Image (cartoon, rainbow over all chains, first blue to last red; front, side, top):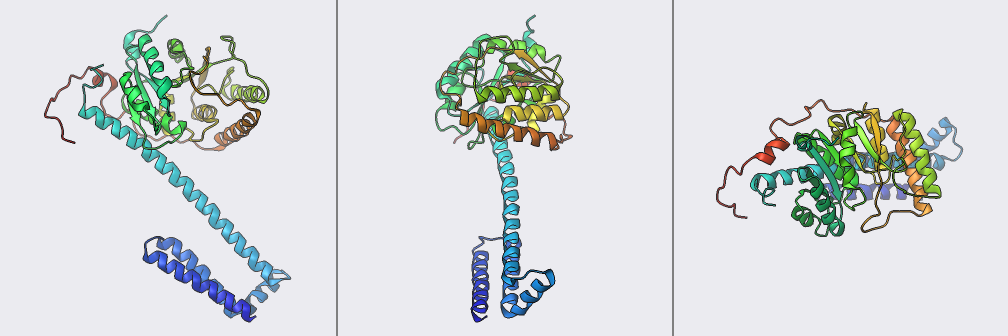
Length: 121
Length: 270
């Protein structure tokens, strides 16, 4: 169990350091940082009290406790990926609208500055 | 029965162009020779060649997008321009010269019966031929769309079409961004938003430059994408904003054409 203990603490510590450093450099927004810090805290709890995972597995009916952990972790990562896909799609739609509006504004600006340019032809 | 010239003053030709400097000039020239009153808006979709310059020299209005958005983004920008500048009808024409401007009047006349008029191949005019899976795909899609529109449509992937005020409002808001199926998907969106669709037989010309995608792998991918777009367009909601169709502060198309150069002040230093 000491290996699990060390790995859990190491993972959590790494997460804390990376998240804190990214926050400090303004590379990460608080709302996303909260998510990862909660995950790191959860990892610490499981590392310090391995009996907790065994107990939950028994209650849920999973024979091998680590399977429950892997299942939970992969479901969580899936959720995060889907969430990010959604955010990217929304951002793409927004940048597209902005690009269209920028093109139209530029055109309007040119027409206002040179109202007779079309009549020259 | 040709339309009167004043009618054409409120018609906008939307021509999306991406690196089309070779064919764009002659396409615009031919169009303007036929209909000098028609305003042509070239939406330069982030070209890295001289598309904008060629278009401006040929006498078109140019809307330059800061980076490549794809045909959907260019179209939506074009329809927004039409909506904000008081155009009552818009015609989509390809920059590569495959759409004969001689059919524009026929498309516009047919707008009396439908909100959107498609210039369609396979409708008796011309001898356009496709074969293999692509033909199957086009037939299947045409059949499906015909049922949705409750009218016979033979060419739902044609990018040559005219839209009235109602359809302009729909397309200014929703125009599918994805390449492949954008023509088809936009028709479904229009139908779901309560527009009617009609068609006029046209003959397409071979492109001046460039190749149409004709391989069977591409055709298959196209079909898959089109079917998915069709199904999604059917189950999605397409709300229209309640904003007025024309911005009252924007100049109308007519006003801008006739407006004299009012202020001839000192040149702005750049």
